[in-house]
Picture (cartoon, rainbow, N blue to C red):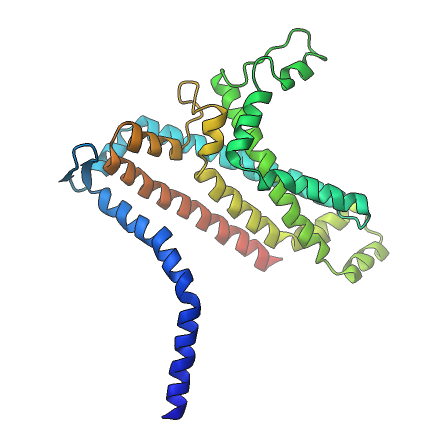
Length: 295
């Protein structure tokens, strides 16, 4: 009996320890998801406070909404670009900064700085740099006479501008994660590879790259999540334009909910976004996780 009371008290202590986290998780994650599911089956107007049950009609309407699929396409393009560029450049920077000299410690701090900046600040900063008379065009004019690219006014260049701003911040995160993994590679393995006569490319291919598999998984998942919920950075940089050519799915949902007052329809799009992003992240985890096991 005494042992049972002791076990129950121990379980109660554990529950009390995790209860603040559970309450916070339920309030910020579970409750909004449940509310979104509820709203998605209604035609809602907060102005008139009307809740009309319409079943699955909101989901049917999405199938005929070109803007939704255009936004998904934009997010997928940004995801592919961000995953590719951020990982490749992140690995290169990590290899360059993987030294113990003090100057490289300073460089590591500087390279991580973009990741801790607010996305809205990054958006406005790049909006200033990429204007027609901005720093980038002035720099390019040194090599090309009277070159004025409308980075934010051209639909193609607008998406390129968003990609640059997105990758600039994510490269910082990827570099730090790869650096941490490189530091964990045993020195004995590196010495053994060097004794075997491997050059730098062979050393990276057969030693570094396989052992960086966990870092690649972490970086890819973080990049995918960051891209699917991309909002404030694009809002500050292009506003979704020109002509909604850079409007992400998060921007479309917020515009539908608050500008058009179609909360139920926006909720149904949010659920589909959750499913698509969850499925994409799951596929990436399974594929990259299999690579970790193989290595």
